[in-house]
Length: 161
Image 1 (cartoon, rainbow, N blue to C red):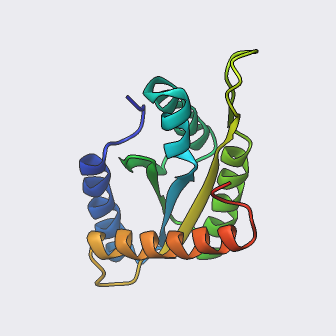
Image 2: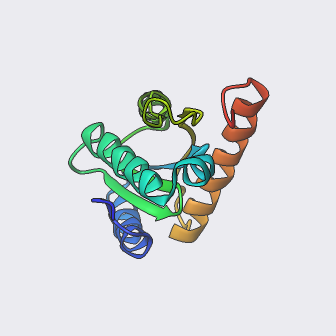
Image 3: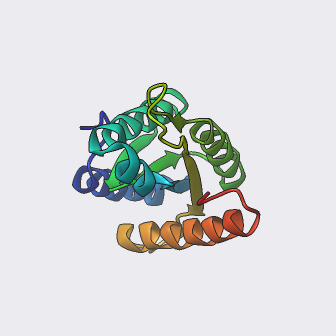
C-alpha cells in the first residue's frame, strides 16, 4: 500500500543502522509518528480514504527526509524514521517539520454530502540510540515518547479534535 518499508523490513534496517552506529560511534535517532484522527477518517469516509491518507503521509515523509533516512510504516497509522548521523536536536526539528506538514492534511467529502471534514495531525516521539540498546527497545522508547507528545498535544487542544 505505502512506498515505505513495512514493519519487518524497517526493523531489519534499524538493526543494520544500530550496528553501523555502534561500530563507527555515530549518532542515531528514531522518530515515531502516530497519526491523530486517522480512525475518524476510516469511520466517516471509509477505508479507501484512509488508504489515501496513508499514501499522502508516506509521500510527505519521503519528500522531507534524506535519501539515507529509513522510513517505514510500523502498522495502522504509525510510522517510523531512522536518522543516522543526526543529533537529537536536529531530529526534533525534523520531527516538528514533518508534524507541521502532516497537520496541514484534511479530508473532506464532496460538496453537499454533509460529511464533516477531518483534520489529520501527527504526534512524534524522538529518541537517540544508546550503546547496547536493542532495536526493539529503541522503538519502544520512541513509542513512549510519542505517547507523551500526544498527551501534551491533547492537553493543548491540538490533537484528537
